[in-house]
Length: 72
Image (cartoon, rainbow, N blue to C red):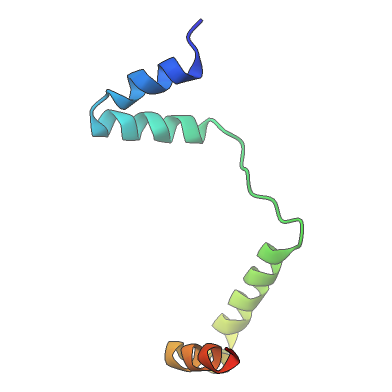
């Protein structure tokens, strides 16, 4: 039976398009790896919905950068 390193060596010899297709196929065969142990994803989705419903609560990138620089 072929080992992972041998498969990798052969795969890396494939043309770029075939490597990309193989990589996509392998990734599609895996279960999702994301976890949300600290509920960060739920918080991000909540904030996104809040921004969509009331865009005036946001700040500009320039204001964000300024605030970050002030914290240093």
